[in-house]
Amino acid sequence: MYRIVTVCTGNICRSPMAEYLLRRAAEESGLDGVVVDSAGVSDEEQGNPIDPRARKVLARLGIDTQDHSARQVTRRDLADCDLVLALDLPHEKALRRMASDEEQASKIHLLREFDPAVSDQAHEDLGIYDPWYGDASDFEATFAMIRDAVDGVIEEASGDPRARSASDHSDGA
Image (tube, rainbow, N blue to C red; front, side):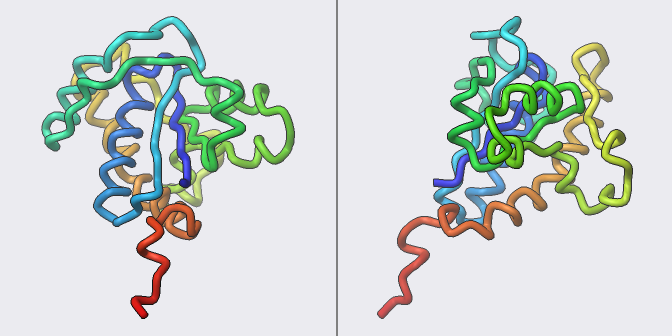
């Protein structure tokens, strides 16, 4: 298995949107070995469902988010995951503080690092702001930034043999 976790503040807006979009993209790409989860750096929203505004954006794509329950990121996530995707700079900073060693720290990236359209921007400009304080247009803007990075993440995951099911490794002979 190739494990990805997306991380934002409370795990009710940005990180679950990224989780569900990445999950769908992995399925559509035939990456049966990719497992995607999400979490928040805060425990404030623990147990809560996805924000209704984020749910609405994803529902438009036919994505059901009923099973989402916010949770806090753990050191176990850093140990077990192959790719840890922070949605904004404060999340990246918090995750790096949690990392127990350089190996774990090397798994941590901002999600938008995987968007080729912004690859020339400074690292500090790659965060995705919190739409929670905004309206529907803020959620649409957040969704677009997440969506634009999904293909790059899937490309990264597809380079790891664990991302594919065992049947993909046979030569048919």
